Amino acid sequence: MVESFTPGQVGTFERDGFLVVEEGLVSERGLELLRERYVPLFDGEYETGIRPDEVNWMPGRDPEDRTRQLCNAWKSDTVIAAQVLSERTGRLAAQLAGYRGVRILQDNVLWKPPGTKAIGFHQDSSYADYLVPPEMITCWISLHETRADAGPIEFVRARTRGRSRRRRGPSSTRRTTGSRGRGRQRPRACSSTRSPSWSSPAAARSTTV
Image (cartoon, rainbow, N blue to C red; front, side, top):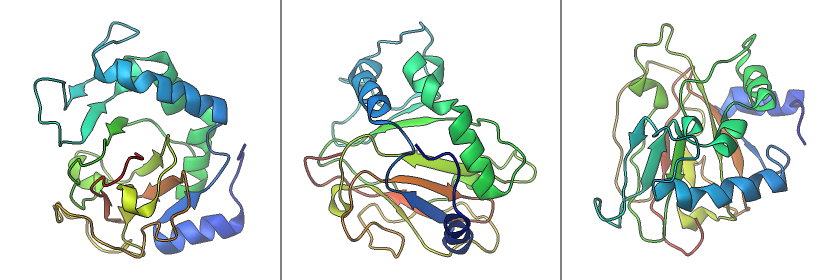
């Protein structure tokens, strides 16, 4: 398991605005447990009895071609909470961003079945403009084997200088220098929006999510 990043990894993060960690961010057993919780959560089964702050897709209520999303599901499930509130993940995030420590702002549990629509390019910090200064770091964890053409998150490399702006990108997949074009599997990515970084989960187009 990754306990700290190398100077080279920190340098890559500072240069590109994101870092892909292929292995060791989450244990295999941890991934299994997280995967087991997805369907029950989206079926409205909340282990703690507390509903997530946002439920942006429900079966029978919303179109099937939409990406499913829950916000702050850590309140609803202890397995999700164990990952979201992980001390080790927080320490790694702080190392990349150069912070003394970090606090959780929110989590997003995303589910992208084949054929679902893309989420447009955006900056996470533009949705939390109440933060002063508007600094944050995002950790994206893929729970299943995935490829660049299966709709994973995409980053725009080196867009880490200038003012943060609210922006919606295209609804279809767009090739960027930050995408995982070589098709490596199961990335764990951390991206800092301390200085703006554009990202987008592209449209899902295969049987892997």
